[in-house]
Image 1: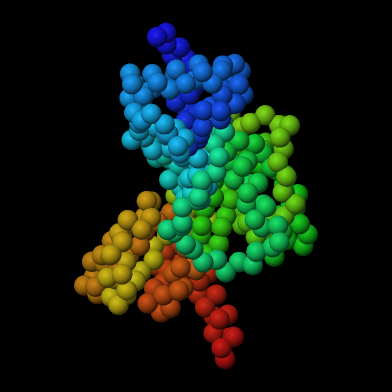
Image 2 (image 1 turned 60 degrees about the vertical axis):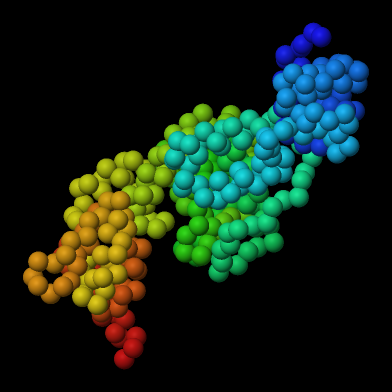
Length: 333
């Protein structure tokens, strides 16, 4: 019996992506890939896959269609779900293995004409306090699609700090969950700058499909993740230039009294650029050393400890916090 290895390979891919496909379904699937064959020819190929290659169950009839033996496969809808999950936890995309898996899944989608299976139940949940607009779901889907296709988007962005909304363009790179809400990290279309855009503030979002895909997508993701890790929360350097400027800024030292020292010492690797140092004066207190381009969110964190934490240096930041505390005291008088 003659063997057409190319055709067999295509059949295996089709069955992997569409487990349960019938003989007639295989003929249609192959014709879509410009392989014109009859059911009789496919039936002979099926025998080879059963008897010689042992990739299909060796049964006379397969009433539930064809499925590969001991091989796990995903439908197109399931692959889409996995991709969304990977983008949802986009900070892990810097891992080499995750990036390789992502590329393989993207290739799978292009080759797959799979029929949808039942989507498995979710095992991870989150709570967001941000109000979702009517087009929130549509914006989220479009951003995820743009991340996969590496295409830029144009969108309207409105924040309380701005008197009017901005019309912006950029390349969406990854999704992040922070402070009970979702952000999309978007790189400027014309500059190597990265911005966290809160999803509930994005509207009128559209894909710029006529523009070429971003050729440095993976490199941009790695650079964005590095900058995020160099900041505190969503207050991170927007570019490598800003990151390098941080080196010239004075070190911030915060001090925690002995009631909070144990909590701080539980997570000495709380930040990749920070250093936790037990005080040497016998008080049992702990110092937290860090350099930040924008310390605003860090200061919010320090204030959350009340009188149990305070800024030691630099003096300029210490004076700024003293003035802020004075204003707070006036509000309580």
